[in-house]
Length: 254
Image (cartoon, rainbow, N blue to C red; front, side, top):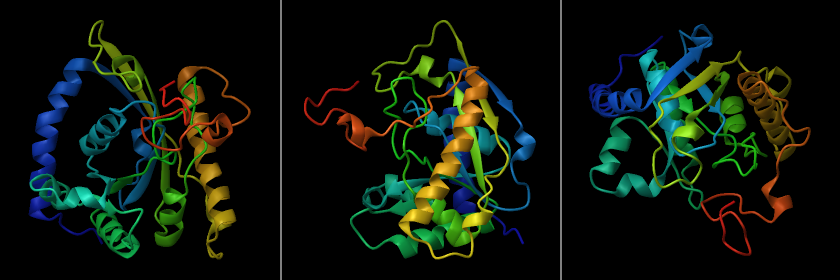
């Protein structure tokens, strides 16, 4: 049964939405497709492609406008910062510390989000894609792990056009001429073959690939293009897996 959303969480989301939504609507038009595929009676995991820093705002706006409070993974250290930490905690964002034992706390918050019919946004790529043509690259297993631990459905999402407003690693927004962002929601990823099995690296890698396949298929439809036959792997191109420094040797962004 869906629980009433905590007052603090509702207030936080209203403040954020009232601040960001008008600015985003001014900068770009939007076209959202297949909104009926968003689950109505349960929480879920959203897995979008990731090609520019403003992606989370766009996906968050789509979810919030359709009655699903968006929640993101955030570094646990951010929760210790005055004001910022209260905003994150108040809006039930998910604390993650790759260097510390916070997995249980993260899972508890995730379960609470799902009980409130919320959506947890996880980028399987972990960071902005390194693929030169902005196709989804080799992913990380966090979304697959959470889905298999909780039973929550995984909803693939693809969007295209935001990179024209704010190109990857850009320093300025390109407002004129006004751009349009198109976003499409897919059917839940079929992960049945991976459920009720021991969760190991092989299983998580296979489930992650299936999630990325669905995202890539949606993106190919939006772009009207054929994706590469082999997914981009940063480690095979001497690139870092995360962060703004892409080239391991030169430290240059490409």
